[in-house]
Amino acid sequence: MTNLLPLLRSGWLRLAVAVTLSATAEGVRAQDPPGPPRYVPASQELHDTIVRLDARWEDAYNTCKMDVHEALIAEDLEFFHDLGGLSTSKRQVLEAVKANVCGKVTRELLPGSIEVYPIKDYGAVQMGYHRFRNVNEPGVGRYARFVHVWRLADGRWQLTRVISLH
Image 1: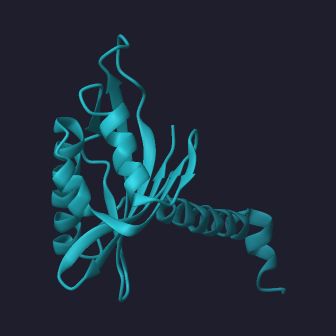
Image 2 (image 1 turned 45 degrees about the vertical axis):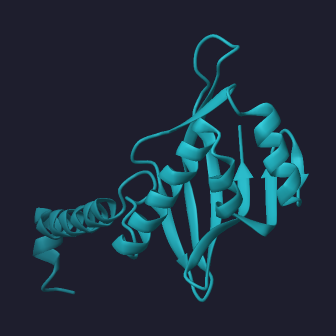
């Protein structure tokens, strides 16, 4: 301790400790940027596949291609809608699209918003933002979050779960 006394009196030791603590705190801040981490696909091939499926689904939605809807939606579909509740009938969902969407509503994906995460031995979860335009209402809706669960079985992708939030 006697060797440190001159350093303590001169302030050099306090300065060295302050600089060390400041550099350590700055290093921690540099490693932890604010906000969520940037999305990077675990598999670019899977991401591209789901983006293509989403584009196919959106085209069918916007142009009332019911045969494409029929092919993309699984028999055991669960459709969760924050305003409409839960539907577990593929037939009811298809009938609702035909009656309430065809020629009346279009979907618009927010470009670059899709995130895809693999689900081992099942398929993938897709999340993103989209908005809807109703031909009978002026203006455009706001973007809202959606979640789709896709199952790959026998080489065929189908939607099994949909969560639609407004």
